[in-house]
Image (cartoon, rainbow, N blue to C red; front, side, top):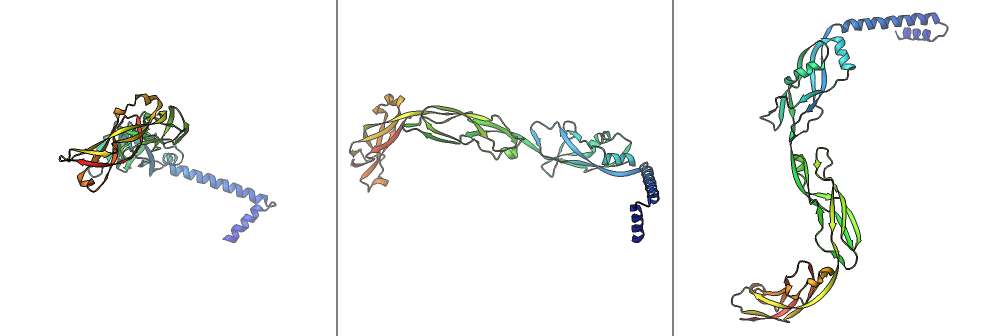
Amino acid sequence: MNARLNHLVDRAKNPRDKNFRNHLYIFLICCGISLFIWFLIKMSDDYVSEISIPLSFSNIPANKHLNNSNERLNIRMRANGGDLFSVKYFSRRGEIDVNMGQVDLKMSRYFNKYYILSSQLSTEVNERFDFDHNLIHISPDTIYLDLEEIISKSLPVVADLSLNCKPQYMLYDSIIIQPSVIMVSGPSSVIDTLDHISTSSTSLNNLDQRKEIVIPIVYPVMDKKVKYSDTEVKVIIPVEQFTEYMIELPVNGISDDTGIIGIRTFPETVQLTYQVAIKDYKLVKPEMFVLSASYDPARDMEKTFLRVKADQYPDYVRISRIHPDKVEFIIQK
């Protein structure tokens, strides 16, 4: 058989055997025409076939997010062979739209998911095909939907800053972020994992005055399902020039023991050094400060010194040091 086939191939290749090649071409053309006619005859009969069609979903409830993707229906139908062949291999099978506002959406008793019955989509399936057909079966018979609740959450903004001031300059007050919180909304499984939003990392050097800058936020989740109320924040950095002053203040000896009349310290006064913004230094008065040395019998029975601490001072003042920071004492009973 192989030898005879090789002989025919060699004759077809032989340029001198032109008559044989012509007969061979006519034979092949006739075979092709016969095969085509046979195909048309077979395609005129009815067949049963299965066609897979993708689904799309519309009118999803505003407070829900649909996590389903690549859902498909397998359609088993009887139709003319030519129509089936055309729709399976040549036609662009568009999606079947599932209108969530019109279908009967139910909650499963066994799974934490919603579902719809595929039989509800029979009309949409039939309208999808513009030829005579008999719909036999749709699978799967149930389409489970992963509908997740959309929630909103206010997240504090954390400024990622690296600051360096010139000598004698410092932060005068807390850094202000506007807005200080950003509203984030999205699927609960995502939003519940977030506790703050950071700004992009920013470095500022040689600061010597108040500074206002706009910094973009860093999205903790890069997901189109998550929405942010703001994309950037304004950061206000209050910087002032500070100076250092020293005052001498009395130390108040105190004790919670009712049997003690008083505590006398040695020395009776100490030097307190503080820093204050130049614009505020005239506001500072000695009577704004209260220093104390507290005696606790259970703690200080064997001690000969008490630590001095500042109990009261203006908010705009920063205590640098107290000298001496420990004093001797005598208990008066």
